[in-house]
Length: 326
Image (cartoon, rainbow, N blue to C red; front, side, top):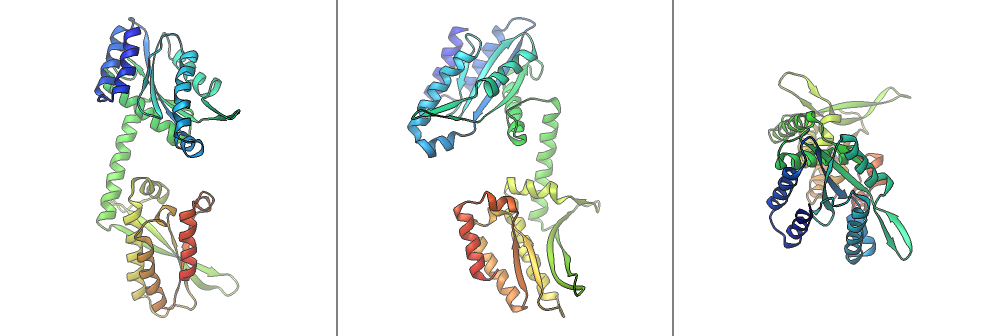
């Protein structure tokens, strides 16, 4: 297996197309012994940007070079190592059992996790692995790569050190893709609705405010739980047009409200990533003007978790909200 290892390194260094990696994996699979398994392990160093920001890109290059040598000392002899990018690599493990492949994953993530040493101090670098096995999970190199990528994605989403491809994962991803497409279509067509949950002051039994809640009703009449579609909207970008849709619906509703008690507060849940969107402040100012015209109070609600993890730009946006009277 000596020549394929060299070929993999050269393909990465020369910047050839990803097809070269597929050909390399195909060659590895063809050379495997009958009845043995071949595990494709995709690895991602999750703290790569953190290293660059904290210690500089030179330390990144040094770390990558040292980690490659560390991999060679940890892995079985002559294990092919393919550099896919600065933070990603692939390993091909030829073995007799699935448990042997899992042992390699445990060795990389738990027994010998990557570390960077700077000025005598050691820092552990998080790593995530995705595993697909030939021929159990795929019988050709392109499919094996795709399924290892899927396992890596699942591991990152579940915050696991590593995950192994499951046959039902492909169906789940297809279903998720369909769900995502339906959500984007529903937002584009304005099919989401806004409901208003009253807030009652217990001492006086008076409605003192409402909370605007977005709801997605399917053609069947059933509602999709917000816990299902809001996180998806936040990850696929649909949260932006969804938020503008809610703002527009509330503005229209304000014009139709008559004889409302004073003071009355309307609370709107906003995803923290919207705070720094260039359209957020102009749209919010227009919404605030509609509230002022009706002498109503506008409240923007953010999750506690988003405040804990907020960056300087988010906090600056919150300060602008306060100055706006929100």
